[in-house]
View 1 (spheres, helix red, strand yellow):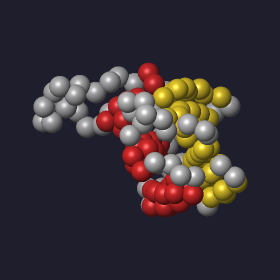
View 2: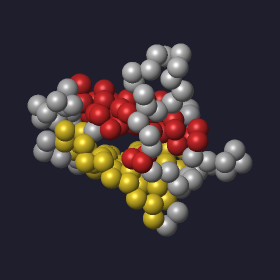
View 3: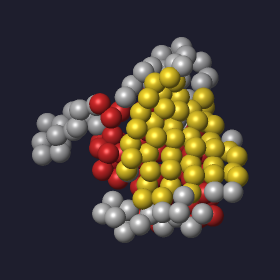
Length: 149
């Protein structure tokens, strides 16, 4: 379920991992139509896939029923602005502990890399909890900044 208007896309996904295919396809179409460079499109897909997977896997009780995750993308002159919103349990990904990337794979706990990708590949991260909803915003620069490739 998506709605594309000019330089914007709004996706409404169910809290179900099968929706990752819908996300990937809609994001690919959006990036192609809005001339988002391939590297930036890859980073957006990676981060959004991780975020939606985490929301579905950890954001809801098992008996939560069908819920909705809303993703808004807007193509700006030199960036893609993104907002991810859900009504799952309160969780500020910006306050989560950084993974220990120096530890061996065997010593590292599972998880945390998705948030690492968010922090290192995106800019202007902001989070707020309002009216029972998590709202995470960020931008993917499309200029020749270090993380834009």
